[in-house]
Every structure is written in structure tokens, then in C-alpha cells.
Length: 524
Image (tube, rainbow, N blue to C red; front, side, top):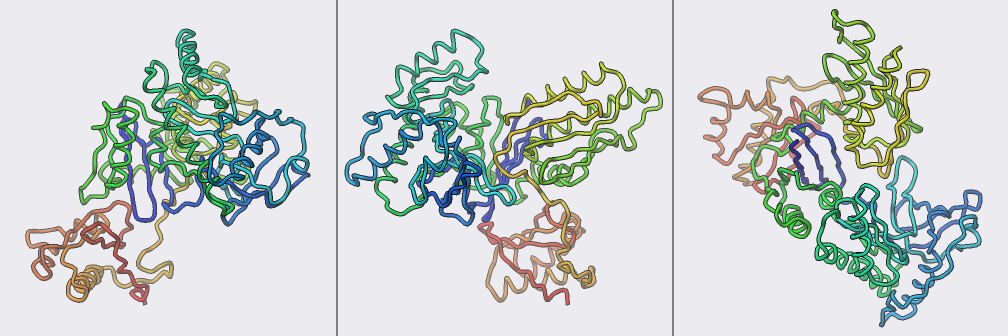
């Protein structure tokens, strides 16, 4: 199996696609100015206590207040609380955590009203991003995730991933980490640490300790509250930290800054794989070149087609996701109805497992498969679904088919489900329903080119249009493109872009920066 990561960096957002055997299996898109990110650490203030929920609302300096439940305070909350007071009491000399005394553990059946008070300063970390009307979810159990290790302050235990099965290797890793970790720190050894040398683990442990020191130093030296103390790595690097494996064949990115970040990170965790990072410089959009745009258009939306005319209907409600499996036109005359139902359901299980990862669907998912009478067929479908979900990193649980033929799946949700709008708003009428004659579209483009060249003085630029329009502009020996170049200069470049609607266009300068040339008055 070949795996490739495609990273599309735009001025406003960054999109990351993971391809397995050229098929899109994971997709993430985030605003570059997003205010929340899982893993960020704040020194924040308690804004309001909610004794009925045994929780409180916390001000982390954003529009929406964050939610912190009593059980998320963590067993070592009193140790954090005392250490925080010691740190802020002396702005010049940092009190080392190794000298801090471990306080009694927080009782599980305690009350938020007896533990916190309004206006109190606490160290918190985001564990779940805002979803719909809910603010971010917080915890006071801080952790710093690396490629091989997770560092946890005020713990003293070393845990090894249960996915590492060999007893000798588990003992080796546990003894190794025990010998190198400082006092008052706990460590979780991740699955990918299996077989790694002591030097590699020690190097990462030092990096994680440095992050903790930076957080506490910022808490000590700043008086502004709330305050962001630690920001999670860039989305591209964070994704690679969790996803990267030695089987990757290529990481393609169209931004030199992100390219340098990723190359430096790979130089730390896998120096031998540093050369698989490639800077993409072609004028063709990166997602178009790797067939990501087309898969996004077909993979999202309410209806998703898969093998031989069968399709899924995916609906999202506030409480759950609901999936209906339909055979559509998929009928084989030589097969019985039971066989056709089984084949359709097995194909649906394959596609559904991909959709869960692709859309990052979480919470409760109810799947209505086509009814099957034979118990062995129902068991086969359940086993197929479990096997397909083994590739999913998110925690999940799958139940066998119920008496009603429904399969229930729960999947961990830490951020909103990914939603890509595949419907295209008419770019020429802006939703009004009336447009200029389409035969005059190229005249409109030429007037924009004339403005750029003769009024603004821009000599080199890129015009992105729908593939059909690009074919028309490039058609013939004496093409429209050649006429424009002879009239306005040879700096005009026509780029075919699959993401654009039929009569949509975008201009970019020589540095690939977007130029806004649209006027709504064109439609009147």
C-alpha cells in the first residue's frame, strides 16, 4: 500500500489530504487564524460555577467560554494548584517542579463548588474543540505529546501502549524511561516507540521537558490573564506526528514555509525519510494534480455512490449521524436476493469505514444496512466492519447488527465533523437567478485582463478557470489565449482548476496571491 500526504496551503486556510493507494481516506481543513486547537494550554480564570452540573465555565480569552467538569480537574489538581501559586509568587526565580511536593489526590466524589471559586487562576488544556453551540472542553491534566512519548507533569508512573504486545520490549521500554525521566513527571510510551533506541527516546523526552519549561516560564513572567502559554504545533506537523509511518512514499506541499517546518520535523523523528518531502511548484493546483479535488466533490454531500450503482445516504443531526444503505441499480440476476444484499452491505462497510475517517464523524453513528436473514451473513458483515475500522486512529466501538438490522458505532469526537459543501453557488449571478449571456463570458475575462495590464500595470499573472472554459480558451492554432498574449503580453497564464464552477474565475499574481477582480454589478 502506498501512502501520500498532500498539503494545500492557502492565505486563509490549510487543507491536508491523506491518500492510500491514490484513494482519499483522511481530510482536514482549518483556518490559519483558528482561535482553538486541541492541545493548547492556557492559564485561565474561572468565570462561573455550575454546581448542578458539577462543572464550571472558564474564560480562556475567546468569544465562547470553555467547559470544565469536576472529573477533568485530574487527580493531581491540588499539586498543580500549589505549584502555580509558588511560580507566580516569584517573578524572578523559577521554582523547579522537581522540588514541588505532591499533594493528596483529588477525590472523585467531590464538588466543584468546594474546589474552585470564581476568579481563580488555573492551568487548563483544550481536549475537544467547539462543536456547534458548545464551547471547547478543557482538562487540568496537562500532557505534551511527542512522536514516541507523552509527558505528564505531576505523575510518577510509566505506562506502555497496550498495542506493544511483546513482554520483553514492554519491560525494556519501561525500565529505560524510568531511568531517564525526571522526578514528578509521568510518561506514556506510544506504540511507535517499539524497537527505538535509548538516544532517540531521550532526545524526544528533552524536547517535551523544554515545552513544559516554556509554559511555566510564560506563566511566571506574564501578568495578563487569561493567557495562551503553549500553542500546539502547526496542523501539518501535528498530523504527521500522529500519522507518520515509514511506509510513506511522499509528502507534497505547495508552501515553502510549511515545507521547511515539515522537513525539519522529519529530520528529528526520521532523518532517513527527510527526502520524501517535496515542494510543489507547478501552476496546476496541487489538489487537482493529485486528483484530490474530484474525490472531495464525490466523497462529500448527502449521497455517496460506491460500487456498481449502490449508494449511501448520510444525514447528520444534533444527536447522531444516520447512514442508510441502498442497493440502487446494483442487481445481479444470477445471484439470489440474499447474496445481492450481502455483497451490497460488504461494499457499504468498506465505503463507510472510509467515510468515517474522511469526514471525521464522531459520536453515535447508526447504520441501516439492507436486511439479511442468514446469521452467518450478519456475522460476516460485522467482522468486515471491524477489520475496516482497524486503520482508524480514533477510539471506536462497534456493536453487531441488532434485531432491526441496525449497526451502532461510537467514535471519538474531538473536533467538529468535516463538512465540505459540494454544491456550487452560481458565481455569475450571486444567487439572483439571472446572468449575462454566457457567450460574452470571455469578453468579461478580457476586460479584466485589460484592467490588470493597462490600468494596474501587472505584467505576469495566472487566470484560473473551469477545465471546460480553459479548453475553449486554448482551442485551435490561433487560440484565444494566443490572441490575448499578443495583445496584452506573454505574462498571461491560463490554469485549469477543478474546484471552480463553470463560469467562475480567479486571478493570481506572480507570487500566487489571490487578486479580487469580481464585481457583483456584472450581473445587472
